[in-house]
Image (cartoon, rainbow, N blue to C red; front, side):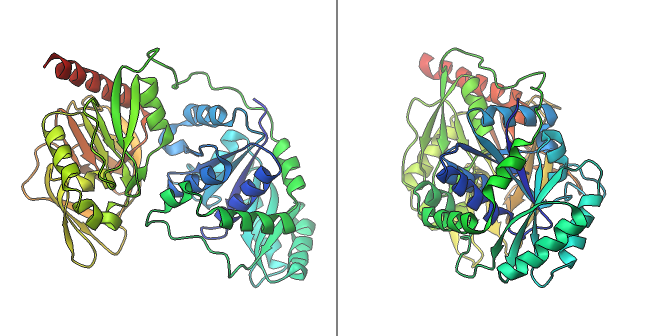
Length: 463
């Protein structure tokens, strides 16, 4: 496959990768190009931005969670029909899973995908020193394909020219554009219904403004040439995205609204390929489960930001509790896990009633409680996994969930950089926990879930 592609990497978090990425995606689209966005690492927000700009579903490409063959398949599958693919990096160029390895970093991903890297730097308060910065990134690791530089937060065009001349003299890299400090342009907060706002097009003026800025000061044609210089990459030797049935054999309800909106698209696609028809509903809007669904998936999001409104949907919560307790196969992760508890207490001490399937209380905290990759192993046979089987994912949450009585069967034993712990709750028909699972790391998760839904369907029809 010979796909024009770029990876925008930064020297550090907050350097402006997202700003440049969105501006470039919008500018390229305005030129009539089909643009495919990707995000390195386990993030839901940035891919949602990309999708809103391009109209094509952006994908996470993550060597830690998915492995090389799956990353290649996701990249190639999503890039079909696109004129150019753009990957937004994560953190700094060499920041990965730990400080003594490049594994999982943007550099690591670029070498797998053989994607030319355009390095974003912050030139605030420097001129010739910018060349020393870039040179360090160039020399740090052999084989990293840095092919150009974008300069952020310059004071003026004259300032940029000083930086450009130093970099091109000392590093031999093209410096292909810049953005001045933009006090009037800021990205919105990463919560409070951001994704529905994106879907409604409310951030289109911001994207248009970023496109205009990029058009004025970035050599987009030069970036296209760099993208076109990417070599052909070989198709993966095996595929996981294969249809198992010619038609849908069961229905699974997906909670989707401002409170619940974090889903890896591959999770949903693998469920469909396994035989599920997906039916979306909004708990926040008071929508009830259709009577003929045979499975339920409540993903992550920000239920704490909508706890008051969710607590008013007593009919929804009553129906969910009844259906789940009656054996409806259910998977809930992070925000969905919190929603199934009895009570959610926000940071100000206000308490709200939730679904109550789990005899537990959720407490919000001001600081991040858990962050990082996870390997989740089932301690017993359950809805998604056989005993001893593992699936990969990540955690990111500001809450803790405490059971009123010791629960007998956790959903997983999770392994991260800080060791092992137990997470969540599992019964024969319910799996709920904080870990966001990526089904593409173990496609049997989707197959098992659909099989459980089919078994439930047969029992329901027999009654």
